[in-house]
Image (spheres, rainbow, N blue to C red):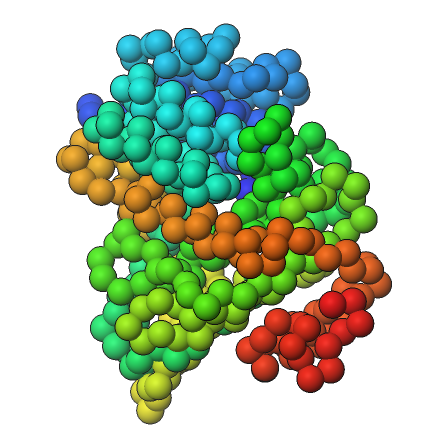
Length: 401
């Protein structure tokens, strides 16, 4: 799911909050992500929004969010330090640009607050380690808002795979195809950038857009109880830039191959891009006794048996709605001293995977012509899947590789 156009729910019905609702302050209020979090906290009986803070309070989208929070009885803080100093704040919800995640999360833990952070957890393994160290020292809960992990279709399909519905896993394919314009990369100073003021931002296709589906893939096939994120070995990656945006430093297209490091050792082939006018996201898993697929709906095709579909519809949306499930898991972890569904300790491996993708590609984003994107979707992606390799290793590689 993309949240860049989520509206602020200014006419939401009042929800009765639980007596043990988490008192949470949100940092970063603008746009789709900020609005999605405000809407979720407002409708979720497990949370009370006690306040909000944004570095740019006079911006029109931020001002609308501030007005909504204030009308709901929340405080409007003048600085992040005020958020941390407020004894009413139990948890901090961080919805800021990537490069603020580490310093804000560490400071929040040091102030004795629980932390929920929007994806990605961070954009460098060192940042993840610092966040985990601060969390453990504080004894508080740290979780990442990876909403797809909480979807009913995902959870039920994962259970079926765990129970051997398609036998041993042999191959995994991921396509995460997005559309972003040149204007998207010019809209804010940090869009597309590698570093901001010396801090890792890495706002490219893998950390910004594809991170949800990478996490989904590695969670679907990871053995054992949740939370669990599989690792990948024998990794290869090639990064490209088709857009002409001048500040796009972190790449808009990635081809990845590897072996998922689980007992079945399935081969993995993945493609992520922001150059597709038709957004499509699909994870396909081939086993020795059938296949499975997830594209917002879970599909199971066991050999010789009827197909099964797993949908997200449920009479109680706060049980299996993706956003709500992750928020509820975070609240439950705080109140019961349990592990949240998207715990820092596991989501760090998504950052490590993406960081390794950049590493094996030597942090090089090869420039490719926009005119080549037509063949990219008609031919190249299909050939990469067919041959399970990077574009340069195809029998007839494209000239732009």
